[in-house]
Image 1 (cartoon, rainbow, N blue to C red):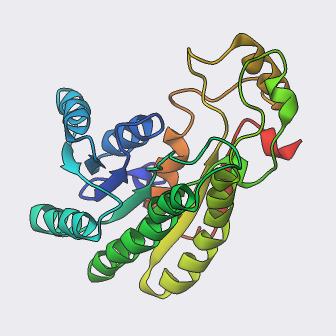
Image 2 (image 1 turned 30 degrees about the vertical axis):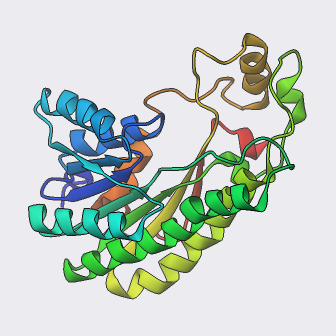
Length: 262
């Protein structure tokens, strides 16, 4: 196979949870540009449909699905819709995250449990549902979207000169850190079925709402001297989704401009 052809996702179907969100948009766009039929899913069906229509307007394949990761029935229904529509799933991107317990340590057990229900328990449940379909199709690729915050502790110097909270909740670090070994575990379970499981750990994303002081502090902390942009995840996502990475599984790959390498 020509090496460039190995990156093609033609005749593949992909589900991106949180597919119209801050990271989800570039992930969904990348998979569609590589030739996949992309199911863009979240609780906000209207937002997903708006973005799917934008991609279809460019001649790409994209459909919107409503998905509530707090509901087993919703996850089951989405997987059934995909199977009925395209025959089954080839690529799953676990990107969605609920941010309901981020205000420091002083959270109720209910708040922590709600976060874990979606960001951990639903991750396990949906991954298993997807793997069952992938086994029927002879294999597939599961891509978890972690965070560089799952690889390191908090860097309080990044917040100097801002009004941002330098002491966020431990739940996000716990969940994203747990994704590191969940990726290895799932890769070990599913490898015999030719299902690969890898994790991408993005760094900070440049947004207009970020204080200039934070941007300057954070940028100095990276080796490339900047935050991530709206294209930085696209290449690695297509690589891990495609046959170009057919011998890569169980990996955790920082995409953070060198933040975690310093």
